[in-house]
Amino acid sequence: MPLDLLPLLRRHEAELIAIRHDLHRHPELGFEESRTAGVVAQALRGWGLEVAEGIARTGVVATLRGRRGSRQGARDGYGAIALRADMDALPIHEATGLDYASRNPGVMHACGHDGHTTMLLGAARHLVEHPDFAGTVHFIFQPAEEGLGGGRLMVEEALFDRFPADAVFGMHNEPGLALGKFGIRVGPMLANVDGWSVRFRGTGGHGAVPHRATDPTQPMAQFVATLQSVIGRNIPAGQTAVLSVGHIAAGDARAPNVIPSEVFLSGTGRSFLPTVRETMERRLRELAAACAQGFGCSAEVDYIHSYPALVNTADEVALAARAARALVGHDAVNDDFPPITAGEDFAYMLLKRPGAFILAGNGVAADGSFHHVHTPRFDFNDGLLTIGAAYWVSLVQHALGDAA
Image (cartoon, rainbow, N blue to C red; front, side, top):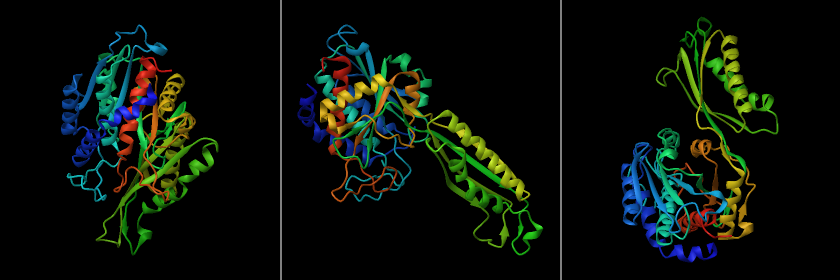
């Protein structure tokens, strides 16, 4: 049956493209997705689903029960599964020049969440028309994935108590991966996400007489220059870790002859293993303190554990891979896809339920080029809408229906 899904889903392709373009024109930041949530809820209710709104402020969850009843007849022991898409945009000024470009200055769908939302809507519509499965499907439209932890808040608001599910599944577009291909893996797939900052303090002084000052720019410079020694000398070569500086602030450009009294810098840390995460934090703190002491200054360090690593479970990866292969063929699905040091708050849902997160190819131009997510010229590939919606339907058929 999944092999027939693409032609069936293409009947609604024009409508899905229209929905996606509308969402793209009206992007909203995390926990501000009121219009987006309204569009989602109205469409779902119009198709006859049970809809709950206001979860984690602006989240929406819809529920559909198969025509074959409850757990009896369900495959792989699943009585209910949950499918999740994210809805928020990013604070980036769009530079695509598209006729459906953002009308909200400084905000754009630069990560494809407009497409993720639309794909799940497409699957929901098809499953309402073809509810030939046993059990229940919950469609989760999550707010605030981009750094604000909407997934964590949904879990804290008892998401899986209100909408019981035996497993939960997510999907994200992947620029650079050909359209029609999928990637997934067992175990850690996306990284722990940490934020850190260091404030070096000295006395500051006149730039003409630096010997009368303690200069915090000196330990800052030394710290930045030696930060990568944590990765190169403290983390085993076979384990992945990233420490990056993203922001440095000191002094005033109008007063270049003034040695500032403090320098602030911040950045991100990425890892997959708890032991690596601990080592990175410990060594960053030690290095900042040592650099400050060496120049007669002080250092104040803040290290925050944000999103946990996203860890896929084996049975659900096998299920997701089967569903994708039934749709696009065996060789188009890589079930040993390399882990990525980006983060995802879908990880919080996977801490509560087994599940799997899959990447769907967003396409590559003929010359091999593509625009990365989180850049001003990125756009979700409309050709993925039907493929992604069909994957969700195939997954439901494999988990709760009769697909082989």
